[in-house]
Length: 393
Image 1 (cartoon, rainbow, N blue to C red):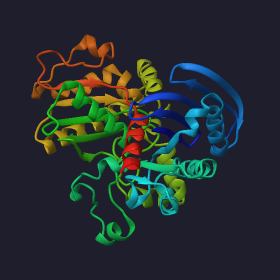
Image 2: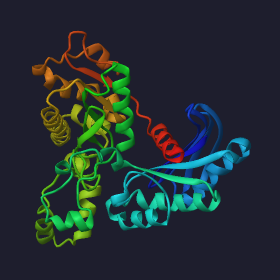
Image 3: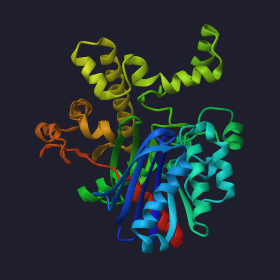
Image 4: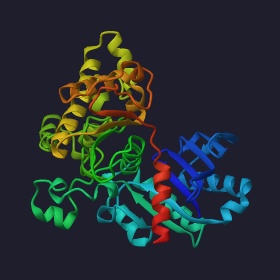
């Protein structure tokens, strides 16, 4: 079975053509700056053999999709003909946010929930419709990020809103980063040889977008993100958790309307808003070295949020076997990992400082009672596996 996997951002298009169930990557590519005249694209045989580059205008996701398919058709004509399905690492479709076949009802649901994922849903809708036109008869599958978290108990999903909001409008804590968290938690169980039916893991996806997940006995039992990816930990430029009544208060104080306030919270909040410098942790670290107090505040807040969620999840799970880190910050910020993990010393954790400084896969010391891993996530392979599972079912 050949599966095309699509990972789409507001200004990017990434794809892999994967032979399943062997999980062999036949071709891949990525296009950046979609929607501009100076887009850049690179296409590969497998994932490493660079075959073709492009620089120039890519006005929209439809053009990006055509470019990707044209590359596959020209370089691998037999493999494109054998494509059975196209899988999308999708974000939000309300009550249908798990692994589902894409049809008109799902597309309408995505449109209805555009406000929850404004940077992603419109781009995915455009790409899905383009694939449906260009590859008629192929099965399209949406692997929606909240699907990983449907195993949480209902009390972990609801807010304290009027029940009708939950029942009629789907106002609840959905959770996100599902593909990444599914991969790294599964790898943690596999690498450490944990009992599949008896383990407790805290998974940290830390980068421009960040979340923490409690994973117990093969299931997500809670996660930091809620109704939208805006919530939970402080994000790169998004606020994270905030009292809902801040919005009308700021509207009265500033004269801004609701849309303007939410734009500020989503684009100029988070690490960027607190530091006044950037939402990129590398820029914040540079500023801290120069003595910038606001940069230090932003980093301290980020680490504090991680510790708060981790502590809560250890209590919920009744203990912890392992912590795993992924994402740009999670994989490369050794000092952050050390500060978070050393907070677990009272539970018997001990850090291997050399392994941590070198960003090795395993960073706990031999005598540690808790294991810690640093992992590179693979969202695309999760989408391929889920797509194959649905097609075969």
